[in-house]
Length: 214
Image (cartoon, rainbow, N blue to C red):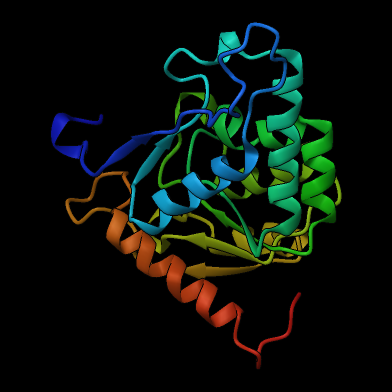
């Protein structure tokens, strides 16, 4: 159970940056994609922990269909140009897998030249009750056949079947990296600093010129 002491860090609210004519009643597509990208990059570089995206505080219902398409296209373009695509941790069927179910986004994930990393959860949730960690990986492959993954990051203490996990990872052409990423009190929560350190090492080693791409 998450308590108040677990809630920490800085959450930024991300507005939809608008074009100069956004205040005009006849304006139909008022999303300034370049400023939106710059804003996201600045927040990430400034060390923000969480970015609350469009729709979380009243903007979503005001978007026109053209604006929805603009934002969707920007997301697809970001996937196509990314160096890494990171999936998880998070609620598997309501936060992670939905990205694989949007046709254009799924196509972009499959076609992207980016490396792919899956961070596994530390414990089952209500929606994944009865599923093992290998089952989590098999679910990714089931909802997006042909998905290729480079690295699966897991905490060794949370893995009950290392061989089964390795086999499931190999089916995605991935290798498993174990790292202590849980909080020190033994709770089933990721420690932000430990997870960031583990991700840094994985990305650094994978980007080494001496390591071939999978």
